[in-house]
Length: 119
Image (cartoon, rainbow, N blue to C red; front, side, top):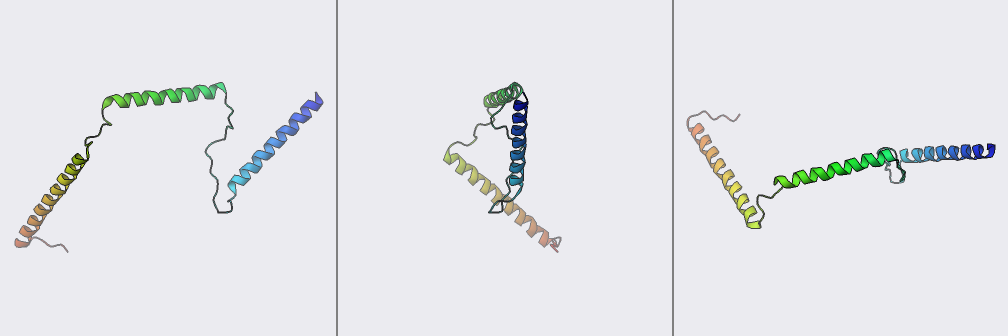
């Protein structure tokens, strides 16, 4: 029993030492000057029942959101064909041109009335 306990203590000590070395290495910049950033604690593939249940619920929630979003029709394209896209762009440009012409007419009118003072 003593031999088993001493072996387990040595193993745990080695594990703690390797984790400490890995953490120190991650905090030090590498040859290129980059620092490794990790999110959370690495699991190395070990999970317990609680974690598996949590991941299963999370996956199920994503599936339900996809189903809800798919039936609404909100993700459908308004302009599917290329000619429709061109027409909408052309319409927007024409609208901007007409607004520009209106603004020019306002400025001309204000200049005539001497109300236009840009500075």
